[in-house]
Length: 381
Ligand code: DGT
Ligand code: MG
Image (tube, rainbow, N blue to C red; front, top):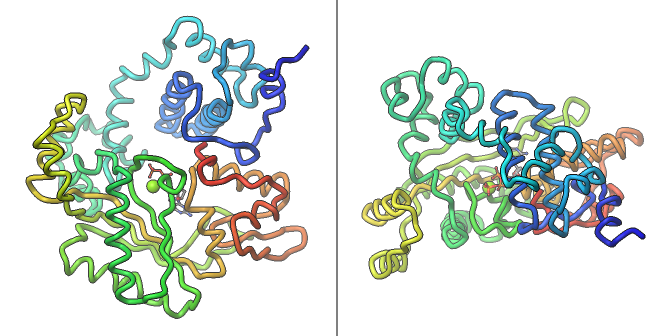
């Protein structure tokens, strides 16, 4: 007789967007290992292997119980072959040799460090590695070759490496609201990205900005950024202008007006006393030093992405900017392959009926796609 677990395993849908992926799950030992293999494949620009491992990770994150044996993995989508071997090694011996080898590999470590710098992608990191660059000091000696973005990334490296807490994200939200409401009292501001999915920490804070009156959006973000700059709260920014996007060309070409910024978030008064009165022993020494330096300078650098969307596109932009990245990728793959529809952060295009499908909410978009609605907290694929 099939156990409830077996039924769940054998009936797990193949696309991530067809199932719930909560933040906390039961298989983190396995997913941590597979995520390292995915990252190594990403560093080698091996898209197929990267996607293979990422899909296996997302399956395991959706599983509502702990996987007990590699045999059980064979029922699960994307968990066969190479992934099954990794799962078996870990479940039987606690570690996977391949993963341990990667973790101690010099190139992997250097790629991890270099791609962690703001403005540095895999190709740049790879080229630097080939040129003999292994760490931040090596880079500082070649500073002339860096773009402005990369120099800024290097300058604020320690702050940007430190995860942004929810409390910090909420203070950023207050700053962003203060700036925008000054110029347009009815503007709508929504925190998206990982924090909307319920994460307690993130690498940045993402916001989506819209207004029922589209003309109110013209120049709004520019004014707000200039105001923040005049208060010394913006350390760096660059803007990507809205491009004309066509679903016929590529469903991945999104073009909302976006400001990628690094803000100087003032320290909160409670932060001061917290650290002085009760230094947490469990905070790593380096992290503690970083926190102390932030308190003495009175602020920390935080990455903040601001996206402007016309009101009619807002539900699509909200869905697109809430993530996770893998959830988004799977939604688009599902749309195209299963429904012959092209989805991006602007809209949904039915390639057979040759029309756009308007939506007033995320729920309506899922309905257009024939999918059960998945709430943001279950999109942590
Ligand atoms: P985090 O910041 O580490 O907590 O993780 P997330 O999930 O907030 O990831 P993030 O901030 O890189 O991006 C948030 C979501 O926004 C992501 O799931 C997909 C979407 N997104 C990010 N960058 C772009 C972009 O350049 N264009 C479009 N259309 N979407 C993007
Ligand atoms: Mg984010």
